[in-house]
Image (cartoon, rainbow, N blue to C red):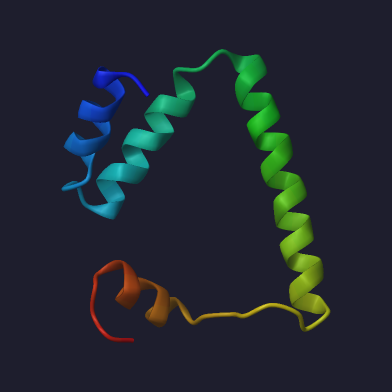
Length: 76
């Protein structure tokens, strides 16, 4: 990891989740299309895998309220 990367990663930690998401979207949009096509394909595969596990009753689910509570650092 370069020093510039480490500095940038540290600089975004204080941002809100919404700001980090917006930044991530902008970074993805800045990549060459052939790179993002692969990302989209991998996400589609992962979404399908998770849906199949959910339908089979496998894995652990969490309510949106619990997820946001964890993100905000408060008890669920």
